[in-house]
Length: 186
Image 1 (cartoon, rainbow, N blue to C red):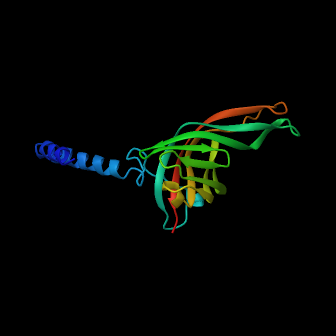
Image 2: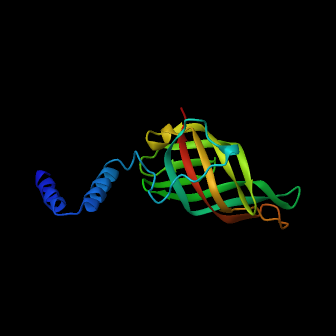
Image 3: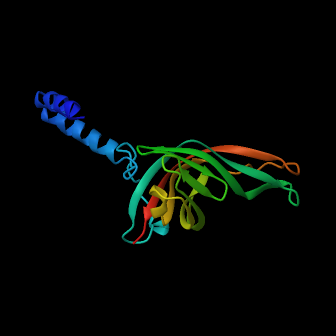
């Protein structure tokens, strides 16, 4: 290990200051990636005031939906798809991956920590599912998500329930995208 450190010092000694800063930042990020999952490429997006998290909250993770669906089931009484949906999504951030599924639930794949939530507030958006503020109602495991108290679903696109008629038991999975921010509230 000492040899690797000496090699690193020699490489850094001839590097530009920008290269040193980038290398040190990369080493620091790799050393604490489980603690700081926010990607430099995924900043916390603007949050509408109507769905803002509790004052003083700190973002502990920002993740983008890479693949996701909202699955709707036909309401047999009306012959239309119900308003409630079941999510199934893969979220990615600098700290790793999060699986989002029924509950609604989220599980951080790096450490196994998980949360369930319920909708607290929503902010409608034209032509897409609404942006949301969710309150965490349960925790599982130890890790990044055990600090989460609230979750924002922001910058949504797609995911709207179909407006056509349907047959009893029919389901449809509608693709969607969003950014999820996990908040540690004071």
